[in-house]
Image 1 (tube, helix red, strand yellow):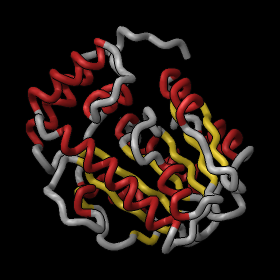
Image 2: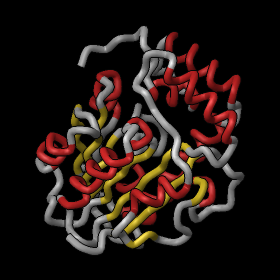
Image 3: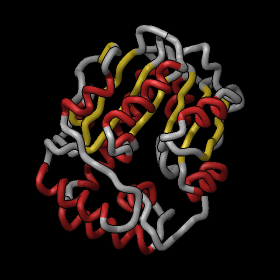
Image 4: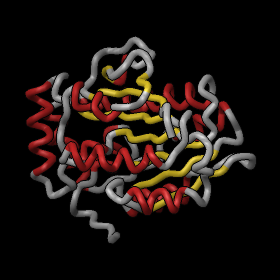
Length: 256
């Protein structure tokens, strides 16, 4: 994929909101337009990152997961999945997947593994799970439990049927004892402002996205063992934060 710095990209806007430097003028302009409507999105971005750290810490620790497939990983920042997992288990193996060439360039430069573990990078789109799984199998043993991480990426698949089909393909490829981790922007916190923010985003020429309510996010976990506290604002998944405009949940694969 050719890098077009004139079209904003969600990963680079997220990077801008997190005070990163891997973004372009188009990302900063779009980011400020969206923040003018929903100023709390900076808090939401940080809360989503903190949720990732808590979820990976739980999975690598209590759940004893040793492999992570982070799809739509975004630009490297603090507490990347491999860093969190390998602090708990140095031998953890992580594959990152993203479709933005800038993400992949920075990932190769910045994401380094422990000697005991492994880290790999795949340039692919979530809508192509076959390519993702084939490439991931170079680093991950798909016969052993894998945590599938989908933070802020299912919202770019507009159709519910298509999103569930992609999820089913990924989940069917991993055994029981694997986990699914999802975060997703919602209509149910700052609803009117979030709807306007998405309208603005969809007018920028970047990849179209949508919001879902709690029931829509819960549907992604159908057939899985959804862990307590269920689907909640990500700042309150095993924490006590102020409600933000992203829902999140973690579920265990019970058949496979």
